[in-house]
Length: 167
Image 1 (tube, helix red, strand yellow):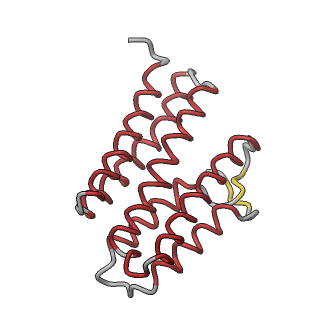
Image 2: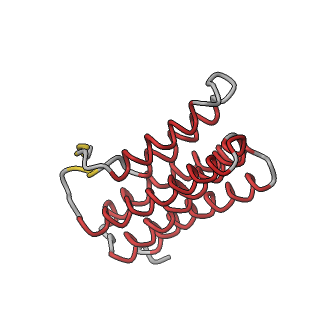
């Protein structure tokens, strides 16, 4: 197997988990949807490291990773939040979910254009999406009113100008 393909296969596996999460959410299987997003997070942590280790980093891989991240950490958590909790707020809940996904897209586009090596500008979508999912998994311990506020705060933090160091 061509070693250039390995990181992209990992990235596509991340995307598969994101799509699977969407399906689980549509089926009302919210815990499974959340777990799929967390598994996507694990794979997302591997693809870039593996590409650098194998010395096969590419612009194609970077773009593919961003597209997978938008699904797995933007759209899937937003739909999961709406389907499991925010639906109770009607149109407001839908609006909050859409804002989360849109801010994630803006965050990824800005990340790709800026190409800063020392820090992130705004929190990464790969942090915001899984954190929202963890909050959803804790829904029996957190009040319902927490979720629209948490979603809006995470949305804002993704598109903010806060400098977050890269580790």
